[in-house]
Image (cartoon, rainbow, N blue to C red; front, side, top):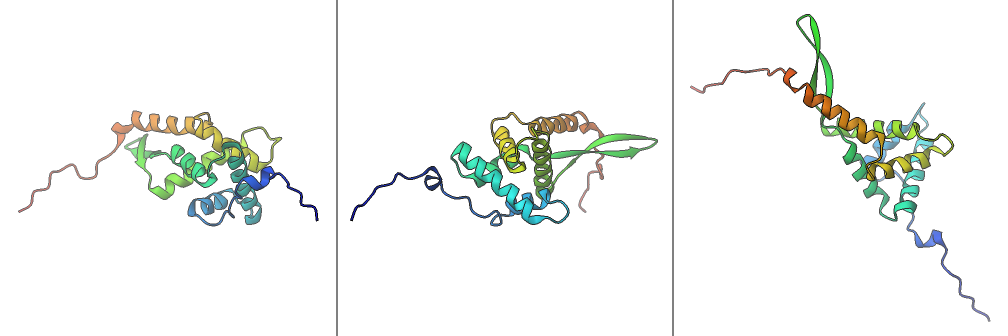
Length: 167
């Protein structure tokens, strides 16, 4: 009886990434990536991205993803409003769901504009890591939207400018 001792492989030292259906953020990612109803493909892309994040950063991939989405989330969007004969840009506040969806869309667009040689999951993982390092075009887009909203804040129309007196 000979007993051999084997060294642990790299795959066994890294904890596996859980299936991407457990959190609402992951579900939102899958639904925003999905095209033509191919949810399995979208799940695979998100799972590959989470694996890439975990291999590169050796941190919890779900926490890194949540932090990256929070970094990109815009607080406002700028909408065109008719005032008289002209249209002016007016900032409008976004709720939590709208902020998250916009951040996910910007992240996916930035990942798709990356090098097309890599698979989609790897590109998405690299883009999330770039967001964490403040090197992503999605962060620049958010800053541009916020700058535009601040520049046009004078165009916000208050609904009731009167001071209400209680009798």
